[in-house]
Image (cartoon, rainbow, N blue to C red; front, top):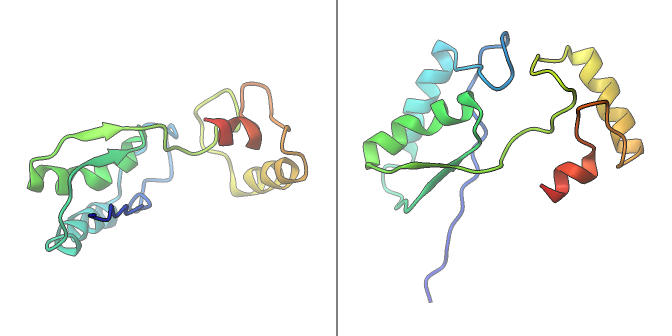
Length: 120
Protein backbone atom coordinates (compact mmCIF):
# COMPACT_ATOMS: atom_id res chain seq x y z
CA UNK A 1 0.00 0.00 0.00
CA UNK A 2 1.40 3.42 -0.97
CA UNK A 3 1.72 6.03 1.72
CA UNK A 4 0.29 9.49 1.13
CA UNK A 5 2.61 12.32 2.13
CA UNK A 6 1.25 15.76 2.94
CA UNK A 7 3.46 18.84 3.09
CA UNK A 8 2.15 21.95 4.82
CA UNK A 9 3.96 25.12 3.82
CA UNK A 10 3.46 28.48 5.42
CA UNK A 11 3.25 31.31 2.91
CA UNK A 12 6.48 33.03 1.92
CA UNK A 13 7.37 36.48 3.24
CA UNK A 14 4.44 38.79 2.56
CA UNK A 15 3.87 42.49 2.27
CA UNK A 16 2.73 43.85 5.65
CA UNK A 17 0.31 46.51 4.40
CA UNK A 18 -2.97 46.41 2.54
CA UNK A 19 -5.93 44.10 2.85
CA UNK A 20 -5.28 40.83 4.61
CA UNK A 21 -6.72 38.76 1.78
CA UNK A 22 -4.98 40.66 -1.01
CA UNK A 23 -1.44 41.05 0.36
CA UNK A 24 1.13 39.58 -2.01
CA UNK A 25 4.77 38.65 -1.53
CA UNK A 26 7.81 40.82 -0.99
CA UNK A 27 10.81 40.41 -3.30
CA UNK A 28 12.32 38.08 -0.68
CA UNK A 29 9.05 36.14 -0.57
CA UNK A 30 9.12 35.72 -4.34
CA UNK A 31 12.64 34.31 -4.05
CA UNK A 32 11.44 31.93 -1.32
CA UNK A 33 8.65 30.74 -3.65
CA UNK A 34 11.30 29.92 -6.27
CA UNK A 35 13.27 28.02 -3.60
CA UNK A 36 10.22 25.77 -3.10
CA UNK A 37 10.59 24.63 -6.71
CA UNK A 38 14.17 23.52 -5.97
CA UNK A 39 13.22 21.97 -2.61
CA UNK A 40 10.53 19.77 -4.18
CA UNK A 41 12.58 18.93 -7.29
CA UNK A 42 12.86 15.20 -6.51
CA UNK A 43 9.58 14.88 -4.61
CA UNK A 44 6.51 13.65 -6.50
CA UNK A 45 3.50 15.94 -6.20
CA UNK A 46 -0.01 14.92 -7.22
CA UNK A 47 -1.93 18.02 -6.16
CA UNK A 48 -1.41 21.47 -4.68
CA UNK A 49 -3.96 23.04 -2.34
CA UNK A 50 -3.78 26.61 -1.10
CA UNK A 51 -5.58 29.07 1.06
CA UNK A 52 -7.43 31.67 -1.03
CA UNK A 53 -5.12 34.33 0.42
CA UNK A 54 -3.04 35.91 -2.35
CA UNK A 55 0.24 35.45 -0.44
CA UNK A 56 -0.43 31.71 -0.12
CA UNK A 57 -1.32 31.26 -3.79
CA UNK A 58 1.69 33.34 -4.86
CA UNK A 59 3.90 31.13 -2.68
CA UNK A 60 3.00 27.92 -4.54
CA UNK A 61 2.36 29.34 -8.02
CA UNK A 62 5.95 28.82 -9.32
CA UNK A 63 5.88 25.20 -8.16
CA UNK A 64 2.46 24.59 -9.71
CA UNK A 65 3.55 26.17 -12.99
CA UNK A 66 6.78 24.18 -13.09
CA UNK A 67 4.83 20.93 -12.54
CA UNK A 68 1.89 21.85 -14.75
CA UNK A 69 -0.48 21.46 -11.80
CA UNK A 70 -3.61 23.35 -10.93
CA UNK A 71 -3.81 25.10 -7.54
CA UNK A 72 -6.95 24.02 -5.70
CA UNK A 73 -8.28 26.53 -3.22
CA UNK A 74 -9.18 25.16 0.20
CA UNK A 75 -10.42 26.73 3.42
CA UNK A 76 -6.89 26.93 4.81
CA UNK A 77 -6.76 30.43 6.15
CA UNK A 78 -6.27 32.49 9.22
CA UNK A 79 -9.09 33.09 11.59
CA UNK A 80 -11.17 36.10 10.72
CA UNK A 81 -10.84 38.33 13.79
CA UNK A 82 -13.00 41.24 12.68
CA UNK A 83 -15.51 42.29 10.08
CA UNK A 84 -13.04 44.26 7.96
CA UNK A 85 -10.14 42.83 5.97
CA UNK A 86 -7.55 45.16 7.52
CA UNK A 87 -4.39 43.83 9.11
CA UNK A 88 -4.46 44.06 12.92
CA UNK A 89 -1.59 45.67 14.78
CA UNK A 90 0.56 43.15 16.69
CA UNK A 91 -0.65 44.64 19.99
CA UNK A 92 -4.34 44.33 19.04
CA UNK A 93 -3.84 40.82 17.68
CA UNK A 94 -2.13 39.74 20.90
CA UNK A 95 -5.06 41.02 22.99
CA UNK A 96 -7.60 39.25 20.77
CA UNK A 97 -5.67 35.99 20.82
CA UNK A 98 -5.29 36.06 24.59
CA UNK A 99 -9.00 36.64 25.10
CA UNK A 100 -9.98 34.02 22.51
CA UNK A 101 -7.80 31.36 24.13
CA UNK A 102 -9.37 32.12 27.48
CA UNK A 103 -12.82 31.62 25.93
CA UNK A 104 -13.15 29.38 22.83
CA UNK A 105 -16.49 31.02 21.96
CA UNK A 106 -15.24 34.63 22.08
CA UNK A 107 -15.39 36.57 18.81
CA UNK A 108 -15.61 40.22 17.90
CA UNK A 109 -18.54 41.33 15.76
CA UNK A 110 -18.02 39.86 12.28
CA UNK A 111 -15.12 37.68 13.45
CA UNK A 112 -14.67 33.98 14.15
CA UNK A 113 -14.23 32.34 17.53
CA UNK A 114 -11.69 29.54 17.98
CA UNK A 115 -14.59 27.07 17.91
CA UNK A 116 -16.00 28.42 14.65
CA UNK A 117 -12.56 28.31 13.01
CA UNK A 118 -12.03 24.72 14.18
CA UNK A 119 -15.36 23.68 12.72
CA UNK A 120 -14.50 25.36 9.41
